Length: 171
Ligand code: SF4
Image (tube, rainbow, N blue to C red; front, side):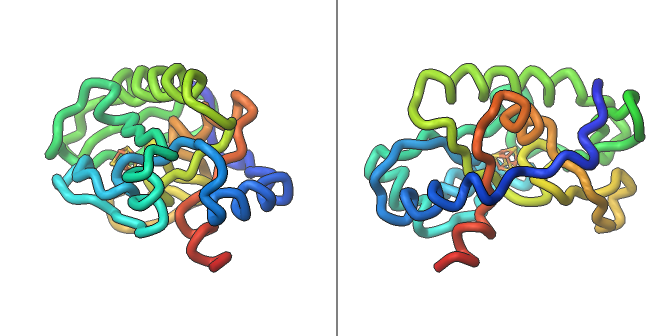
């Protein structure tokens, strides 16, 4: 699997998207847990009110790449390990879950392509959805620069990729 570290989002090109999201005038995709769907590894959600309301109005397509890749909820937490072209995703039980993460990212991209604008709001720091900063693979709460597997797939496909923090910080 390719290395995801270091590639940054073009946030300036996304500023207009933030305004459109706040106006509720576009359809876009988001991490399912941000809409209030309890799909996190621990069976909880990361609800962000503006995204939950947009979901309830049918403006948002919620996607959970880890569930789409075949992982169950709840599940062991996972982090990206390694460097260079050899990075992998392992869960806290030291099982290699890379295949499920890559498959989930591919399915999320396919679903997003059939939905609306090339805009996605993803959950920060996640090994799937994190943008710019993720945990370092040691399960010690240490952060490093890098993107989650699905976030990188969306960037590579030319999406405007935002995090929930971009929305909250802009209010
Ligand atoms: S994979 Fe993304 S959508 Fe699913 S629980 Fe993790 S952060 Fe949320």
